[in-house]
Length: 472
Image (cartoon, rainbow, N blue to C red):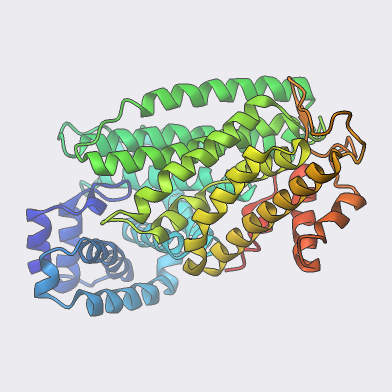
């Protein structure tokens, strides 16, 4: 109860965020479990442990005064173990209830925090199913809400919506929640000055997630890939306009805590340009072969430059860590900007782009130890950077372009309207000679991995599971 009193005095940032921002709801959950007046459900216990785990972690990371009163390290460990046991209970997955949906949503956040995207997707599927059974996607449900939790239920549903749409595009699969099934309104923005910016940011994330879902459905789904190129281009331009409009709305969000807002703004830029590059790359695949338009290239550069601006903020933050950035930003971003810049660098012998890649690789080095997934991400980027540097130096010495043809006057040139990412074969598939060159800079397994990655990427939009070998 002392911890609950502390929450009333100083509200944790976690309780301003998207899934749960109702302190009274959390207090009621704790009272249900610790001072029961009726049978306590598995969902009650799981939901309480899930929220409490993140709240205590925040107190610990911020070195709050409560750390001097309690052994938070041991409390967090005990809470984590209890929560993990709760999530394995059959009832949490099989019985559709508000509390079980909360518990699963907390589990999704925990899985993301531990770089376990597949575990998160499994929990996401169950949480979405609960919400759909309970009718959280329909506005009528909230009008008839019997227990006064309509606000929290609405936030819970839209939090799952945002995660679902982002994972749909990232993993290359249809989303669990279909837009044509939804008529529930988005959460109302609070009039409280402390909460309002977070609510505005949540509204922006919902709009952005809706666009991400459309990008997959309209450009990358199996059906969308059969659509003629002119129609794909029209869809791409419409979605690009929607993204630009969404970005203007984001710039109007103003946080009361400048340090957090500044870091959040840079984080959003990384995610925005990653998604924009994925969108603009869609017109190149698979219809038009290996051509990448200048807009896609520009977005890719902005994406990597945004990463370079954002990373130091996490490295030097007193609140967040490099691991937070790795798990919540890097793993939620597409590899498309890295691949686009790599292909541009080796096809135009661009020193500037090779140096950009190398700079990005240097910032990823501290994230290697966070998880095996991030170790693989670093390895991919490091191998691409090494190949780009090796081919650049080789081309400079020989005055030969990627095509293997001597270029008068040496050096490489880039056409003004488009550039070819795989000049030897118009289809975009890497040639045997280029794959053989990779062996000059990489081991055989590394060269095979890079070749497979580029061929897979050129054929469409491979999922993060394919790129990183995610198996947990």
